[in-house]
Image 1 (cartoon, rainbow, N blue to C red):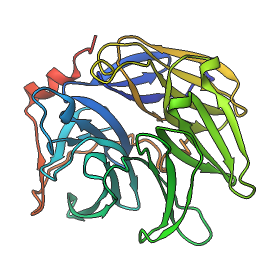
Image 2 (cartoon, one colour):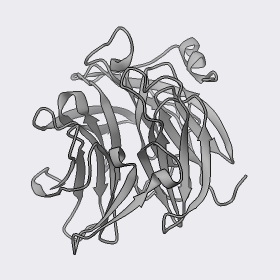
Image 3 (spheres, rainbow, N blue to C red):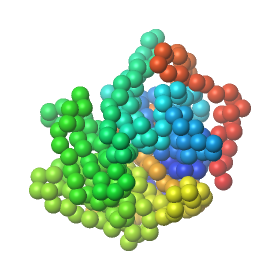
Length: 324
């Protein structure tokens, strides 16, 4: 075990992996491409893109629910999810980048006698904006600020809103085909994927600092976690669209506070690295909720506007097998 490295959970196009005590294990696969990871005090949520599988099931992507030991619990489906990207649990709500529908879906998780169900609202964007990442700063003086990345298949933007999704402002000139957004001490951090770099913008002066990730590993930066003294950045090999999700190699860069390399975590045959979260060390680029450690039995109540489906034990065992 390397004391310098936090435990991580990593979503890729071939499966979801846990990196714990220096050992990499596959914890879920078989539901297409995995993009988003989040959790609340009890459960782990994964966004799975079935829309990239053949035949392509548009509108049939899932939010998968696991317990803290990565055992299968159920799935949220039937809500016209298409090309899901990043997800973010905050204040009893699960925010979902429903990228193929150009909107943010918000599931308000409700509790009745320990039986969770949900209601859904949505925030629509203009077609083509390709909203793919979200981060919520709950510690601001004036209330929650929601940051959203518009990838736009070209020059990207970060837009920010209040908790009612009233527009507050935007940041442009941050490169092309952006992923991830995080704000710390008045500085905004994004993965400028096409340029293979991290851009850090001082929000008070507008000045940018560029960290060239290709000096450590060639490829597209995507997936960002932040713990005290550490940055974790996912790197994916470049490939044409029809081949990008097959078994290419990836890497997670472990960097210090000033983005100097500490270690590379190699990921063999995982396809694209799509999300990185830290399970230990208090991931500041996530929601501030410690990774849940006390799994409980969950019984789902079917809501009116969606379904929470359960899988059989045989299906669960199939998805716990090795991805290799």
